Length: 464
Image (cartoon, rainbow, N blue to C red; front, side, top):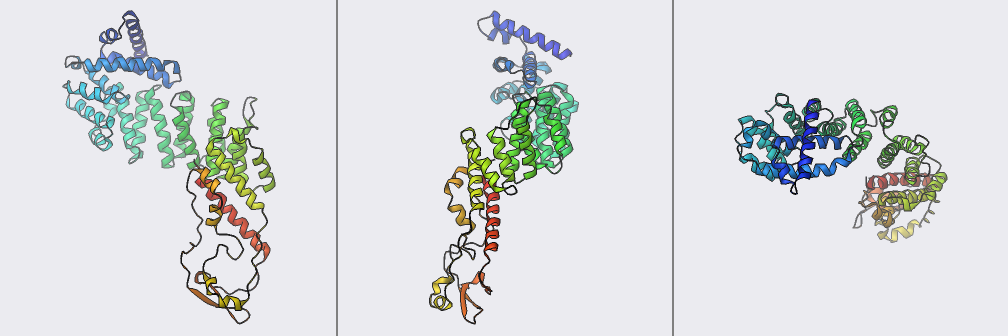
């Protein structure tokens, strides 16, 4: 409370000085670096809490702070508050050139010098060196303003290789600086790490705290990315009731968008139950707002039932979707779903006429690979290649099914005993005794299974 009151006074003073003089340089010269950095922190905290109107003020304060630090001399840095302010400015996203130049004019104690080196490595994209420089330093032993930022930076650096240690550091950052940009950033990072570690309880707790405190932050889109990815990754560990608890704290529009994103990712990843649940929640809406006509909700709901629902109903729903209201990626999903639903209900291809054994004997070239198997269906690769529009629209190469590759040279024939006592020439990989004609019902079932596999491949190749 004391810090907020002092900083608020400093902001008012700085703005008054800016207005009073034609040049902003007079305002920044009248303030110490630590005063400007504290003002900058307060503005950033307001932005993190959802005050987007403060963003122009942040830009102005960054400009003023940068200019003041470039002018700072050794005498300024005899005040340890100013050197700490320089480090905080760097870890707040400040200009690394300014930080390096200003630090070269200071004569800090050995620990502050080590922090400065770690911060410079961090700002210049040398994470390994930054970790080594900062590892021995305990953020909890530092002044609160510096310790909070240092814990956040160390936690971010260790997130990939040492996630458990990173989570401890991010907890320290939140403890040292509640209700600030530092806490907002620490929560966002914690949520992603918890999902990667499979810690559903921590993921849910962090998501709840973020939605309660920082839903309107300009950085909330990054939280949404982590939240949707975490729900997909932890779908077996997070109940639908818990998802409802978290999303019910959002406004209706944000809740709908989150559910639509979950439904899309779940459909692409083949999580039909989760996709159906999220699609239904998106369609249901809240507070009298219904989204039954949202083409995205209709598309994702249809994708979740394309292999289990009545195919005629699925095709009817797909045909009603307004393509013009879909993104390019969703239009690719719609194309794939429509193509596959049409193939599933198509009648089986007629079986090829069986050639007499004597003719096969006289034509050894029949041993070469054919474009159709014993059911008359082309191989999966062939099906994909016959739909270039769908594959191209997905923006990604479609992986082929786990089928035997088609050889580019003739396969050595093998002779298998035929029922009539003669010999039938077949590819070596398919040397079997033919007991009789293939049952049309079996052929239809084989075709359907292949088409269902193809759905999974197409959805898996669609952009996420």
